[in-house]
Image 1 (cartoon, rainbow, N blue to C red):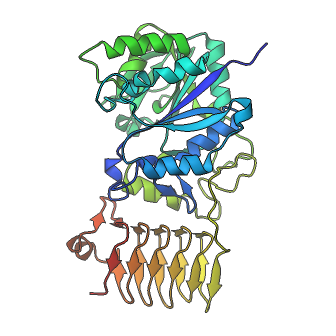
Image 2: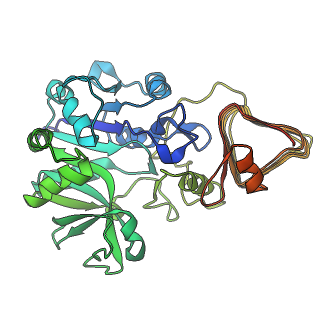
Image 3: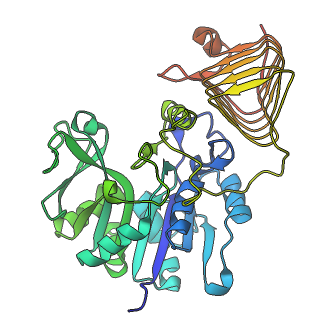
Length: 407
């Protein structure tokens, strides 16, 4: 039996407004994460590790750094017909941006025609997880249905925050509910519900038909979850794939089934804190299913003058010169000077923390300089008065290349 032809399309065009100021001048999937990675590296690594090597990344807003990262990092064996390519909004149907995620696919239908796949994998670009997508593809093919939606089990008490899937005993979706007040429980676990992960697999011909009808519907929002999935549910052609059934080589008990949406500052910070404990909720050190990126050309991290880092990730090129770092993630080329204290924070590339400075529960974007004796995250009212963002959960964010004075 010949292998099915598959085209993967990654939706990477969102603005990421809730991640401001980290998305002031970069696309959300290009936001750095975990020291050396960008958010998009997780979905691309999952696709590549799953043997799905023909990938189109649909971009739109502020995509320069994202396009550059993809072109410099994600190179496939072109002799075998493999590729990872960023595809900007091409305006093939007129001078307009994408009207929604479904419209992004519809406007990019030329890619489908050129690749001529049997199945189309449609995944988001900004979640943290490991997944063997080949297992989901097998479940889709065996079902004979047109649409498969990845479902994450969440407590029913928290399910109102998600798009919720109601399915029968055969996993066929009976309804797709947007943030319902009374979420339906699972047949085998009444206190849990299926939340949509925003990851889909479609049979190519069925998706083309659905996208064409959606484009012609003036009342549609042109959204994959809001319009295309319900289209297939109404025709009894959609099933849920239970993410808990997915097995990934090298996964530990502590991070099996891990999935995080990092769409807000608090979620982004919390996901970083998941990385740094002795037994992390999500481990970056699984060599059997690696998350890969374009590693920085920098020397190893250096600790001098009794500088310390505990329960932390310290990237290449960092110098901890007599300062103390605790429960934090440091991107490449960060400097922490004498008697400085960094706690529960995320420091992006080339940030500098001066002598006697304090950084607490904060996110510092690239190039931030914290002057000697300055404080960030200690007094939230003072942080706001200086123009810094303070999240609902009390995380202070300092934008790119800002100098933080001691006053």
